[in-house]
Image (cartoon, rainbow, N blue to C red):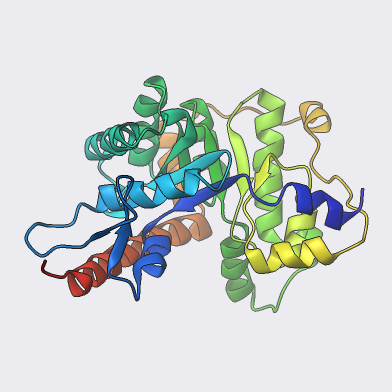
Length: 298
């Protein structure tokens, strides 16, 4: 199969809403999409409901994009299991009020131990979760063991850390640390029969994407999608569930002590997870500040 034809037919099957996306969406505008009319003014008289704001945008996206739409729980709750659960339930309830079934929604949660435990509860309630900021096999295993629907391992951010740490400009595609990390997770899942979807994210180039051909899902920036669409080279399947099932991969029983120790021993994963949470939190604060600036009186 040629690359262009493949990606033209499968370029979009999901979307993600988070603080950065929402910040970009409302910057320069005084309006928020609303189900009951085209737009609603932001008002000073009452605080803006950020959950409702995210759901309003997510609702509009469901009209355009098939498949899941991810909506993020406030990253500042990344170490608060109970409040994350409450926040997720409210987001799902708001979608229900908007006429969107929960089967269309992924609740996006940072892959801390506390976030993963929140996902454990939510998944049992039929609320599907996207565990994001995956940088290690420990996180991936913990998510799979609680029945998480989907993980987002960040390929490019892993490579960024290793480039700086190793003092190099780059890697051959097959030796890219981000590619190797996702490949390891994928093979582990398929070996041990986990159903959690592996969705590679945060790509820096098309070579990383092609090295993960065969992965369950990939989330790809428009610029890289355009390059893939224009390409005519054949695509070689690099990840194969049947081959992975035959590999000699030992199973790790994950508990909190094991999780925290494995994270402690992985400097990259520890640093990038913390950095990711900080950056997501900064985006939420930016969003809050923009909303304050954009509020208008009747």
